[in-house]
Length: 251
Ligand code: PGA
Image 1 (tube, rainbow, N blue to C red):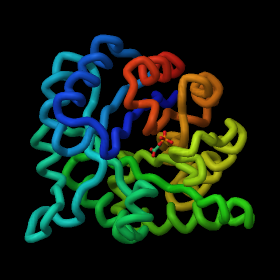
Image 2 (tube, helix red, strand yellow):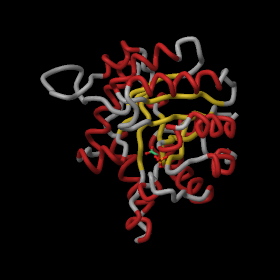
Image 3 (spheres, helix red, strand yellow):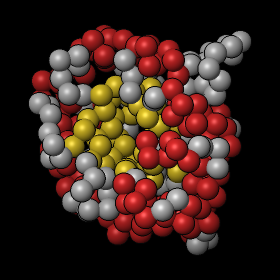
Image 4 (tube, rainbow, N blue to C red):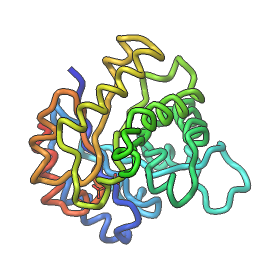
């Protein structure tokens, strides 16, 4: 059985001091579990603090994004090695906010994914359709384009390290959540695409997270689904109590 992953994406919230306090509260409330891993993705400015705070706990730390080259003259960017040497093990790539506000394409996201994998950083690659696309019955086409688009840039030998997060854009930060059935349907589609592209064993091993207004009120139902291998959580991950409750749904 696949282990679940509960990941908090703090986005552009929390000063360094606030981030340390939140991480400390979460570390106090989570002792580890064989059913779920826990990951915190603070802003870059607090990664060092959060790594230090969770050092003696089983909690993982990750970046919310990274640059597409190993290093270079890219003002404002962060390299994968900078994340790794601070203690990160994961990186979120291609979040819909990166696609929308920073024009990230599937190809660029794939390039970042390949770079992360080649250096030993586990990528969580986000895919998801917009509301108009779902209403126009284009969910399958969009998901297929995104999954095939980014994975075309990735070496076969490394695909087993990839985590995919299905995040319907209409559910992110809106309070609207996909029903467990809606999420499961797309997770199955992603697994099917992975099987077509690679093989059954690789597809069966793929961890697929759901993201989009996951909160204590819906986490039991969503995480109760065998097909949902965890959650990527924005808003509710900023509250220690809410995040710990969601973790308990997975464990
Ligand atoms: P949300 O964000 O939980 O606030 O909807 C999810 C995400 O953007 O990863």
